[in-house]
Length: 147
Image 1 (tube, rainbow, N blue to C red):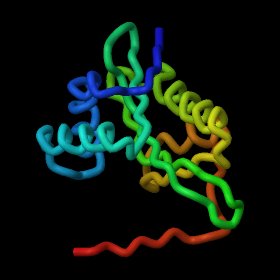
Image 2: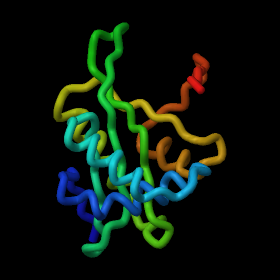
Image 3: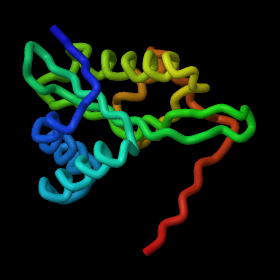
Image 4: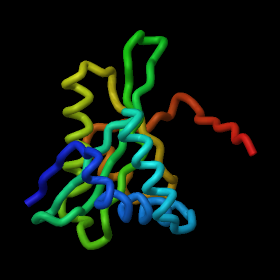
């Protein structure tokens, strides 16, 4: 059984290894201390909404939403910045349930929608599209990196 909850401060020890594995997936070095500090700051400062998934009572995955705005539509949006599911819980519906929880939260607070960005080779693209996300083919995404 899959259970999704909004993470609070007491869930940080469960989120640390999830965030660390997520970062490793994207080519970063393991750093659980930095992950802990990052999570503590996000929750303390209320910078993000984090959902954690449990599969039969075990932590299985998480997603993190950041609030932003669409000036064109004059409405708030969420950026679904992170989604990660432990390997052993993949293909069991955990990722889908996390995404559905994010969508439900978005609708509950009358946000315009959820934006997400993913690696070109991320197999989760099929899941996103199955759950209603549309690939943007009308604009380009740019990023400037401060060194």
